[in-house]
Image 1 (cartoon, rainbow, N blue to C red):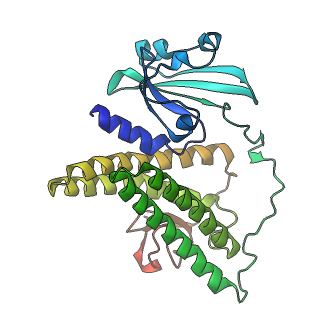
Image 2: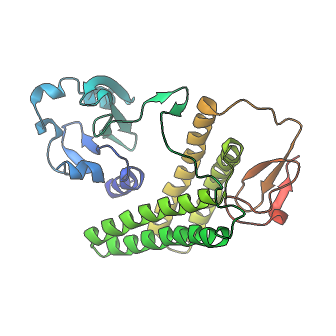
Image 3: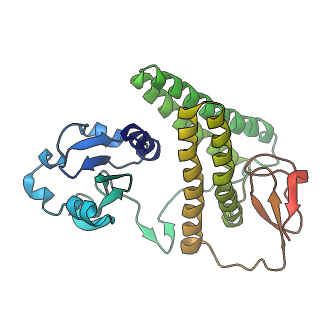
Length: 296
């Protein structure tokens, strides 16, 4: 991968991360930053070692990450309590590492027994079966369409060098996403006990890698090299989504037995549904029950 490809992949992956993230060279010169880092005044071309007081860099493990090719981690006391610093090597560029901290920018919710302490009142399915349900369901879909629209417009703006316009549109897209999830929860579009759904989604994400990669190959064969390069990154991200969900399942999901039930696989997206019959509509891609085949 070229330097530009690596930086593009970095921004796709890290731009919306809530902490400051940057690519740095072994010389400590910053190569690229995400949006949060930019808010702190960090930018490419300066040395991260010049930031803040010199004594705050004594625990830097950049050299260790570059020399060993292995990720490094340290813990330290930050403004909000214990924080963690990470240095992750980039295999395609041995002198570069991805560096970020967790617990530096803001205080995270304390986790206890897999659940965050919260006073949030559940709104799940409160409007289901009421005269408001059709309107709210339509709003959920409309806001979801708005996410797609705003991100597409942001991409177009960024391609034209209008970074401020792009950033504003991305913020609108993120808000639309929250709105869509709110309305979908209100009408009970997804089950409150969501673990079985997540397990099926993980399977779809894993199979999504091969499908997106195959499509990227077709796009590349059509001569659209730049688009194909990004789609290959998307393919890897699809797989990573499955990995992340599996990790959440192992850590937090209740142990249940589904050995007596059947498994139905969506032939379009790969979503797996466990039950006696397939779902009426695939929760991932919206296909009808006829798109499902029983997994033998």
